[in-house]
Image (cartoon, rainbow, N blue to C red; front, side):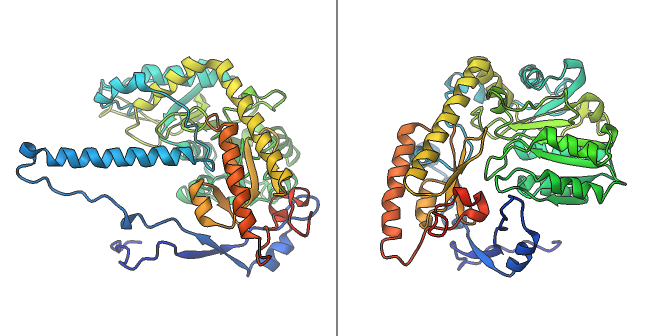
Length: 472
């Protein structure tokens, strides 16, 4: 760790494989079977790594002495940008596996690219650096505070650089409130939650999940009872990364109470990266609100909202954030954020979208996503392909394709024997039909000689959602 970083060898294999444990099977009642997991521990599966970018990177070279006269350098760079734009256009057409809304137009904001906008420091306290967008940032934060029912004088928050930073900040606040607290998170939580535990040197307890991906609250209570002497810091998923499962916030709170944890002995962070902004617009969906005893909520701005650069929103209670705030004379502001310098363009893009779409606009887009997700799931099942769609979710989980080139072409996210499509506002029925038709054509070739069979995904999504030879 302390030595010099060695460069990749010249013969580095871009298709290198690493070993990782097989996903845990489940039993009939939906909870993970510990005994089966132990028996399977020795089995390994292969993870296909992406290509080594060093084999295709664009070299930075020094300009020639006469470049300003000949214009060769400018012509070369213009050609590179033109080719890159064509590549981006093609890749955008075949994008299904990651939760990014690519349906946006921010042409009206291009005039702001000439400014270095930086919101360093606390969003609510102006810094000596005058080229900022705090007035937009606080407007966006007020909108989210209203959405999650927290008064202006009771909340604090900021626009982060990504969803991971929101989780890092929310868990840090919990750790500062309860320095000896134990972090509880389901096994299907985003990897950034466990990264936070490592970074902050926190004790972390992984809680089992149901086959849906939702936290197993019975296992959660059992593990709370083993650690009643220490406060609890809990990560609640408002949409898990792979299956789009929503943890039952009310049941989590109930289990805390049953285990003897009063509200002054626990802190709940809600990771709502994607569905945290979709759920408020779904009828009959449980509410994520600060009227319940939660400590913080974070969402991503580049996912459902459709901001072209990674960003996020983190909201917490004002009385909690004081535990980690420090005044900084150099900034003439306060330091309570993870990062110092913060992208000042992102708040403007978020403000612009929130004003253009409003609550009704987002509600229409949520309904479209859920409707198209059900269409995809139904078409897959009709074609004999095992698939699952959680309630309140637009993430369709199905059998992993047998061709990694097909996976890369459609940019599918895979884990073990399953893959998923995240249906976002830019995913149309026409695009889903194109994907389905190509998938069915490929499957006809994968299984034509009988040597290969569709993957069994019962351990991932339950027997009723698996259509392999054993579970048809």
